[in-house]
Image (cartoon, rainbow, N blue to C red; front, side, top):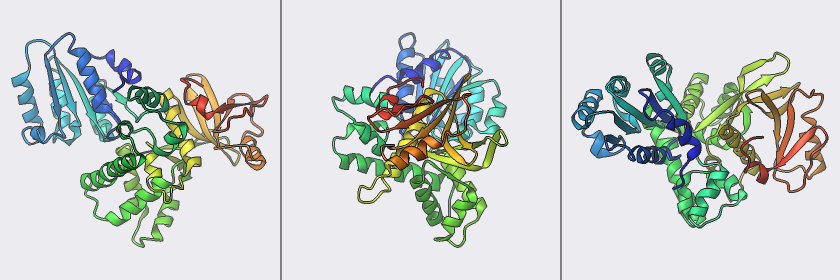
Length: 393
């Protein structure tokens, strides 16, 4: 497995700190591998290390609560600073209390979890100033190229647009095997995990919502519009229920949403949001007859890559014309439009006209899958294949 230095480098600065290192992200995105790579680095200087995976039955059947964990560490640690690695700790009852106690006793604590409740307001309030958080994502294209080279394989841009970047899928040779793996992954982390974790009783309603949302990536929505759509299949459906289910999907890092920025009010509009899948495979496995939604997947891929590059993102409302992204990092701002192709004249006019009547306060960018360069004096065109290899805009 490749070393994901992009994620490890900022964590390395805190190896010996008593701050709790919280590593979060969707299941199977590579958190455990990164945790193992950090452990291997620390093993170069000490063997005073305790590692526990709370998805392992041998662990969770023995250590059932905070007191059990504290006793286990006290019994097994050696003299001096001890390095603790706890994988998927959110499954342990009272894990917050255990972490608060253990960090005080000359321990350096690393924890992972696939639920944003690790960073809930209750926990962060109690640990104010006592933790640092890092989010891990599935592979972006640069990482895919590095990993497939290690495996002596290849991955095209088209393959990435359809099947995304979950690391383990690249270990399988055939598309059929990859599809089966991704379907099983979806059933586990999207459906079963959430139904069991939140004790969802309206399973049919929840599955309908999940399928609708994951097929509707890269689209603006309101909770009211989703509720009206779901009501066509389920008459007993309330706005509050839909909001709750959407929160579950965000808490598990399955989707992310960004707010709309209005030029008229110069502020965020919270009632309209745009939803993106953590990985485009969630869309593709729901498509029939290989009719993949490449247009919206491409925008979703651009979103994931921009987040990896460190940009804060908004949807930009240009007086009724939607621009896909306002991307900001430091004092640099970009307005970015994404399209699969602008070869067709109508598509060209539609996408480029989104920037109409805008001043030059922002750099204007359009990203497409075309091979020709469509840059103008005011708008920079970036080919997708080039964008995927960039570290900055």
